[in-house]
Length: 120
View 1 (tube, one colour):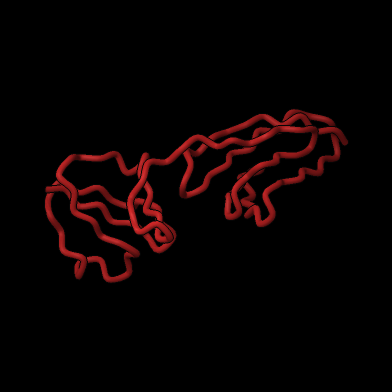
View 2 (tube, helix red, strand yellow):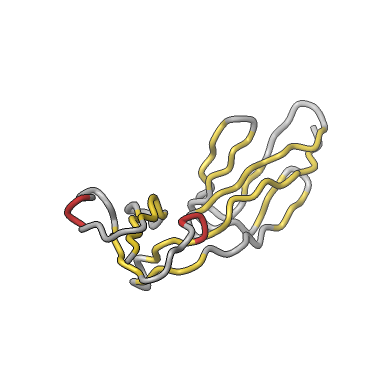
């Protein structure tokens, strides 16, 4: 028996290869017991649907100075500064034209680094 511990946002924090009781993690959003061993980097807990599910790839759209089609709540790391996307897109302002690497993460998707062409 394996135990998966999820935070209140649905992120899988731990995959433990023995049974642990929910009382041991009182601040967890959800504690599940499963038969198979699962990679916590590939799972998340969907509280709306009431079930654990696999993470999926982002379906982002890159444009000049912008990343579109991001789920609300996506965290973007731009040069070490984290920005939370609250409207589905991230606009980037630069002082010098460049290709800017941006790491995007969301509880329901695999973390990914994209390169955005930016113009000053």
